[in-house]
Image (cartoon, rainbow, N blue to C red; front, top):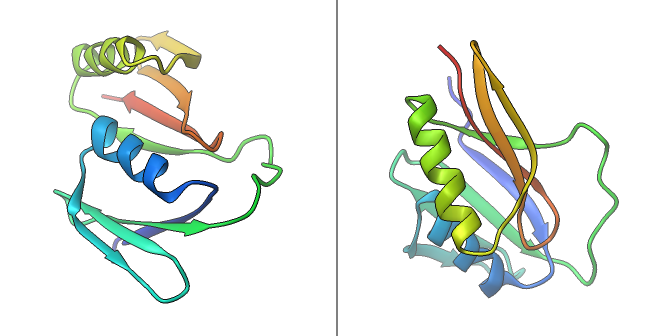
Length: 118
């Protein structure tokens, strides 16, 4: 058994879809729109991201986040540089022998972690 999807409330579907396509490999050509307004888009690993329209951003619990695991510390640094060049700044960083990571915020303020662990 493996986790198959994540549902996120978003204020602007197109903006969020573009963000996850540009930075995290979700393919807009896989996007399926449902009658309730939800858009589900898939990445190359077969993971589905369900984006659901809401009127306004919600309050987030302190620790809530989700992450993308990369194969090396260098890949994490490279992804951080690319995201930063696109104007998305890291809000948290960690460089330890057993963890290299950063967190940024998506357009609706959801914390997204990019990390490597041995």
